[in-house]
Image (cartoon, rainbow, N blue to C red):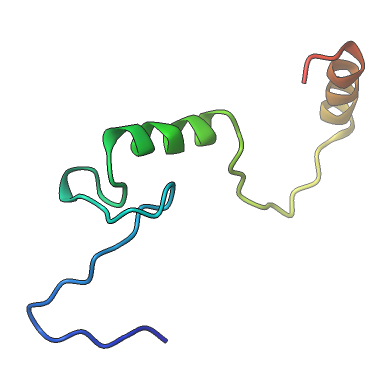
Length: 72
């Protein structure tokens, strides 16, 4: 489990992008830049949420076609 902190003492979180201490204005990040890097990773689909769903045949065919054309 985690450490027990005395009352009134907030523990300093680390930025999930670079590991520096987080800043209140852009929490949990340390800077607007790290916040934008994280957003870019979500938009670029670097981060993915696992799913048990199986794509249908049409989706698989479309994906294979794009990969064969070198689009991804």
